[in-house]
Image (tube, rainbow, N blue to C red):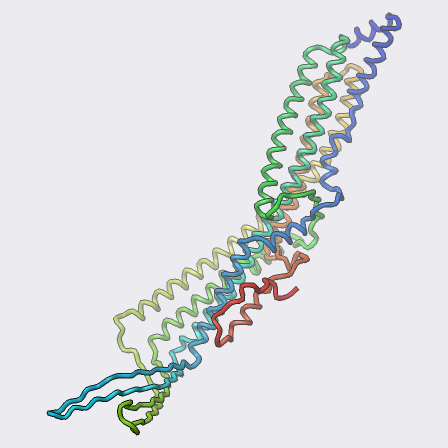
Length: 485
């Protein structure tokens, strides 16, 4: 082999030849002992403890500053107002009225001018409205509960997107570190190969193979930089600022123990299921409200009027009237019946949507759990692969040093090690994302359940404030979003 020839030639040379032989041995040792730890820096970064922004910090920032979540909270406060609107029908209405006029009465030569005036107060009170009032109140309350579940679903979506964006940056930074170190290792190896080629220990083919592998590593590094830039841009969109130094979060500890438990929890507690359930209840209330319009309506009223003629003194007189009123619908052109039929069709729609929500929640839970256990299995497999490839690479390097392996064998072994380390990083990322997806599928990916150290938005505070409010159209736009800490 050419390596043996170069080595044998150096045995018969003088001092200069001996210097070259020693240099060749040093170059050979450089190729054979390129540190394995250089390629492991990326994985070490995945579990590092460097100070920086934690995932909890990022989730807290998303919870407090996301405009979509703020808009959803405002929308829910508007839904809360439906309850006092429905309850208003139970309360009396008080109306004040007044009028003035001018009259001219003539009879033959007799002409009389009068300036009549009237002021009064009318009070109306519904006594029985066919059950429509209670049905409307119940419908409004169910819509409030449905809205709260939808708001919780939005919160989970925001937090899941934020967690995914955070973990994407951590993953892509680790992959970039691996590619940077691989490029650096291959650069030093190419330099060593060129030096050994100059002294006749390697062929031009060996050098070309090293050059090709370095070019591929450079392309991988550039691609990794692009992926990281994209992930950082997504993070900035969700958080409002570019990420700093991010740290790898610990594994979540409060996950279900198996798929059956996950599915069972999702079918009951998933926000989409809860929202669909309350929307269905609201549709049943709508049937009662529509049917109530076909029943008799009973109300009471009290009126008090004062009348006088401004042109004639001492003409003032008062009128007081108390009455009970009953209205019995006989025929209204079929409109009320159409409302009842329409409400029944809507109830069927909501019932079907409730069934679909349960199926969707089940599917989401199963997919999330399968993604989790798949990622966990992949992690164990790639850990074994990394360990095996590290041993294999060391062996190939030693064999190459004695001439039984080629440079291409070393390059292939190095590439296999880098590839398995990159896949391990990605599997670790996938496990973390799947863990948060499992929490989301069962309705536990919330600021409360995650224990975020932020002022928590109390979805009930505004409802309790307005449900029995009798007066006051203003809203306090400067009131903080949190009613409790």
